[in-house]
Amino acid sequence: MLLYEHPVNQARESRGELTINSVWFWGGGNMPQSTQSPYTYVWSDNDLPRALALASDTSHSELPADAQEWLQTQISGNHLVVLDALQGKAKYRNAYDWRETLVSMDKNWFLPAYKALKNGKINQLTITALNETSSQRFEITRSDLWKFWRITKPLPAHIETH
Image (cartoon, rainbow, N blue to C red; front, side, top):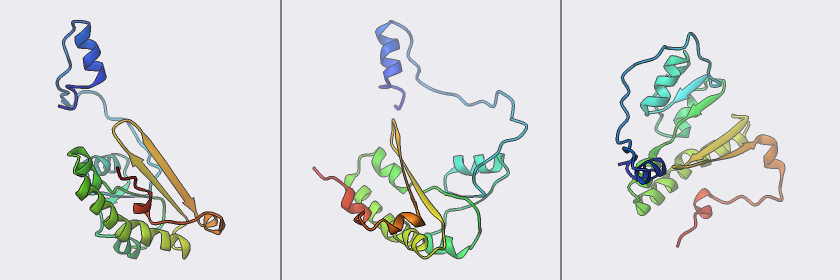
């Protein structure tokens, strides 16, 4: 269904060409000799980031229950933490569960990560928010916390409701 209404398929159909209705991954091609990752550790329950970590010989584990558990590991380096709990809710347009999950993520991940940044346990926090067509990146360092003219608000306060 993802490909059915894709603009490429609509253009193909308008030209009288066959539409693309599936993608088959069959293992063709060559595995790169070596791959490098900018991360020293990957935390995810999703198969793709874990497979990429494995391919790049990057340490990886399942996603901890919350940021407190993650911080207790005390593993140094540049970490990738994949928080994709909103994906299914957005895909099925379940606004109520999406909002409740975001509130939970704010409480269990974003606020503790912010506090860890503030206390010097982590040096930088980068959040990359993805949607179907684009991404948005938010980055904060410990020195950014000194910018007192910025008013801090909890993440749910930035949600627009209509």
